[in-house]
Image 1: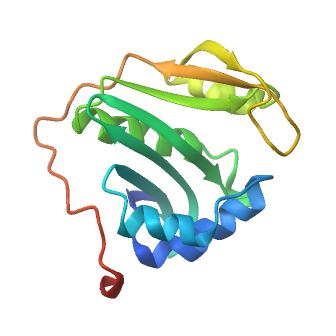
Image 2 (image 1 turned 45 degrees about the vertical axis):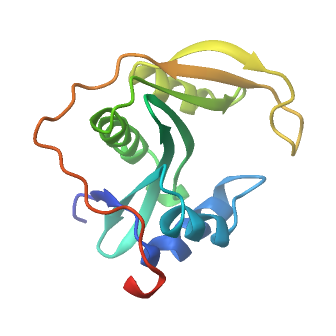
Length: 168
């Protein structure tokens, strides 16, 4: 087994990403939502962890000016416990910092201690609670913020993000 490669998500990855999303979340985003993120949403950035042609996980965020919001992070069940979620999240924070974000926010279920611990290990702190945030069971969410973003990589250059439908 090789080490997963972290790279930007492309249109060809949408089916596998949607499959992971469906298996992970009670109210999953649709395949079409991910397709729109890659082809139309100029403020979205998504990374995938790929190993031997298989997408093991993904992480995405929206960035507007100096604000960024992590929208979703998920790892295939059989690939969990290998640090893939942490690598994806850390790399996503680096990308967001390189693009000018001074902080990142996210919501996490109050019952999801594993994710909370991962986020805390990357510098996130809980700053509040969103009551009945999750529609599937009305569970509360912690609002977490990372104000200590990675140092900007002065050599960072970004490939064009929006992918045309015929470029897959």
